[in-house]
Amino acid sequence: MDSTTLRTYCLNKREATETFPFGEDVRVFKVMGKIFALLPVGEPVSISLKCEPTWVQILRSTYAAVRPGYHLNKEHWNTISFDGSISDEEILGMIDHSYDQVVKGLSRKDREKLKR
Image 1 (tube, helix red, strand yellow):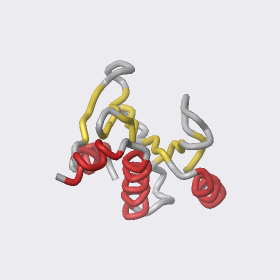
Image 2: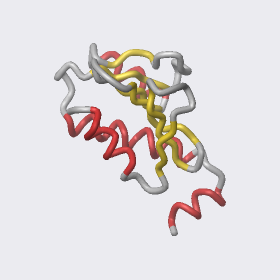
Image 3: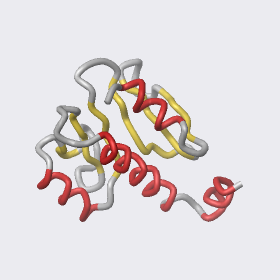
Image 4: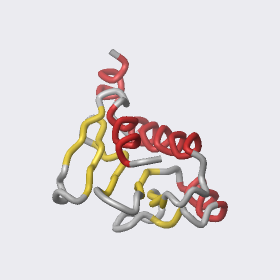
């Protein structure tokens, strides 16, 4: 999977936006102002995603390509390297999970706005 496909997938999430708050080297995808994915520009391709803490540990113990989130809270974030060891479908599922984790943490008012 390439970064263009990942970018498109993230931006197709409801109310998703792309920003560059850390400079031109990292795309940051947000929903309602909250980060759900960080995608460095260039090669090698990797993505950092939010994750439920128990699932964080399961993914890290299952895949060598999943490691603690780079410069992020290690309890809730993983960085995934694209070395071919994880299927595209599973990576897209991880993006979905990250987005859902962030949406779950939004205020009721913001969650209601997303449903419209």
